[in-house]
Each structure stands twice: as C-alpha cells, then as structure tokens.
Amino acid sequence: MTIDLPDGPLSYRSSGSGPPLVCLHSLLAGPAAFQGIEDRFEGFTVVVPDLPGFGASAARPDIYAAADALVQAAKTTIGSPMTLLGNGLGGFVALAMAGRHPDSVDRLVLIGSGRCFTDQGREALARMGDAVTSGGMEAVVETALARMFSPGFLTANPGVAARWRGVLLELPVSGFVHACSVLTELDLTDLLDGISHPVLVLVGSEDQATPPAMAEDLVAHLTNGRLVRLDGLGHVPYLEDPDATLRPILAFLKGGTP
Image (cartoon, rainbow, N blue to C red; front, side, top):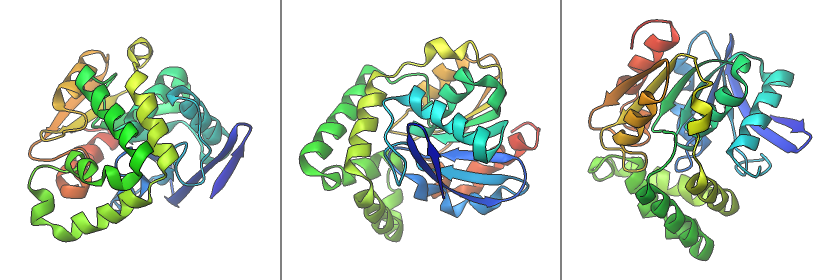
C-alpha cells in the first residue's frame, strides 16, 4: 500500500487489528526482516513502512524529515498514538518521531540503536557508503552479513546466509548510500529530553553494527528507559532467536516488566 504525501509517497504493508504497532527496519536488513515475527504481535495492527529511499517510499533529506513523514502518514491513514519498534536505522527514526511528535507516540521498543554513532561507527558507515557507490550492494554483502549476525551464526545456518545475501543484493543502492551518509552525521541528543515515553532498549551482546555501549549510553540519557541485553545475539536478534528477542518485547507491550 502507498500513502501519497506532499513530499512524496510512503509505502507500507499492514496486518492484524488493534492499535498501531509501527515496525521500522534496519539499514542492513530492510523491511523483509520483520516478516517472520509480524504475526506474533496479537492485538495490534502491525504496520511495516519502507523507510525513505526503500521500496516505493520517496527519499527524504534526513532522519527528521523521515520522522515527520511517518507521523503525517499516521495521522491520515495509520492511526495514532503509535507504538514504535525500531531496529538500527529504524530506531533512530523512532526516537526522532517521539522527540518531535510526542503526542503521536505511545511507547518505543528500540533494538540496536543509540543517540549517535561513535567515530569508529561513523567511519564504518562512510566506508560502506563509499563501497556501495563504487561497486553496488555486492561490494558490502559480506560486511553487512557480519554486522547483522553474531559470529558463527551464518556458518551454522547456511540457508539463512544464502537468503540474506539475496535480500541484501536487492536493497536500493541510492537509498542505502543516502542512509549511510545521514547516519554518519546524526546526533539525537538534543531530542532526548523531550522523550518521556516508556522505552525498552534491547541490544545483542554480539552486535557489531550498534554495539552494547551505544544502548547503555542511550538509556543513560532517557528519563524512562530500560535496557535488556540479549546474550549471544547480533544486530538483528529476532532473525537469530525470535523467542528470546520477543519475550521481553511482548511483556513490555502488555505493560509488564520485560
């Protein structure tokens, strides 16, 4: 489905019924990553947008414009207040949505996210963007897989490795490169004081893309944040162990303690 907005279309898929749970995808995995867990969120209308530059969604200049577009779409079609579940890139967008439009958001689940990247993280993003610019997605497939999953997981699960190589090769070059550039410059610190929503922050202990220190730092800057560490898992932990990842999330969404 597509919503036509003044600054260009926003595409999404939707399933289930109930209040909106908007799942915002990682740069590395894309929106396909949520397909295996969408039916686990009973009692919610699960909405999975293509973030700007992905799918049929028009590119936006930065995270803030992406956040504004998603909130505008929610007001016209999706519904609000929304529960947001963001992974990686999607986590940064979720924080921007909550900080800029607090009345449109109910609570947040952030997986592998933070308020900004370290210098090392910025350099890694810049290298990936440059590699894709010159060589297409093929140039970063192995790097991206190593950042998505914990060490040894892909060797033990060759079918998963083959599937995600295919998914990564289909990601849009221009959208990927632009997102890398945006993330290297991003710092959401100034928005965090305006986020009083309940926030569950999860991070895989083996996350190479957004390491645990980023999650710990984020929680320290939130007034109502709780951290859950997922031992042995990587940047997209619900692809490795959906039960371990969803257990604290579902408890949080039901208002309990994860």
